[in-house]
Length: 470
Image 1 (cartoon, rainbow, N blue to C red):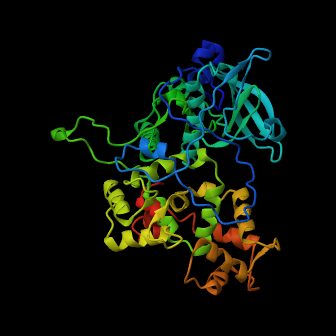
Image 2 (tube, rainbow, N blue to C red):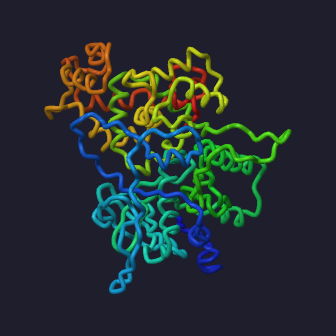
Image 3 (cartoon, rainbow, N blue to C red):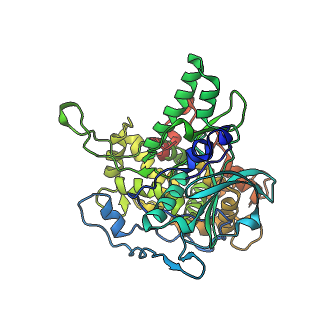
């Protein structure tokens, strides 16, 4: 439904053969699941521990499990869009909550492309001067509720895949009376399609490198439970014009979340049994290596994220939670790990379970699972870090004291914690308390090392690595 760069064939073949058309012009899918989004604006500082998070019974039933579901709050009824004849617009928002005004934060520049549902412009962030691409989807062209769901799902999937080096990153989403705006990375190097046609041929080595990237993106999407459904050279863009420019995948407008277990034809007529998105393992192992304060901080951050940013993880939780109880037991985690091919010992599974079980309840609830499998790019966002620090800094002094840390542990139900040791580990200036810079250093510490080949067999990675959620 949009592109983020300018191709070289705009004037030659009109817009239907341009970069813009290749990415923007396509049929809308009518079989979709709901999704929505909001701008990643600064989250308000919480002043109480996160509420226990549950999933609605309707959502749990949709996972295909037969056991009775636990009691969950009902979902909000779907919005209906009523036409406003006087303005030619629609009442009712596409995104779930009110967003900032796009033009308060960005300056819109030249048009990069136009398609059936919207227009892509260059946009410049006022605060930093950085250039991005802004895809504006005209709300008047969202003629059916399925069209609205397509937009929501596209945003949802982009958040779910956020952080992959070869997938376009979504920076923020905005909505006004006329359009929904998606601010994304700017890829100024043109389409893979254009580079192929301009060159005429690639060396075997160069072609193999591109094929490796494309197949890697497909594997990453599938491991995260996403099917792109529109893979073609036009939907791969180069970041710049350099020969060694990174390649990024775009246009998730036709993409869907898929649930494993479809009875595809296979050997002996037995359907393959791989019902979990295999990418969760990396993040779980990361989580187990963190100290108690960092785990609590990530839980606070997880509670502040929008539904769209964690919707994919929610689907994963439902797949593992076989009895729909809202809690993942040891046996359910064990079965889930086996099904993704994780070869872990009983002791290692027990350790992963204990690491993710922040409140020591003996099970992993929804909020704990989201925290344990959250991608680092969300954890390291400045607004999220400040919000988490403010949660612990109860008196607003700019420091986390021993008493405040003890109070947080009590609120999370964490016992048998040596507060002094946590403070000493993080306190760089030895003043007996944690300031914001020390807190941020702790939150970043060790993150870059996770996922390196040399550490893949290290048990201390955590639950995310165990489920291969890279």
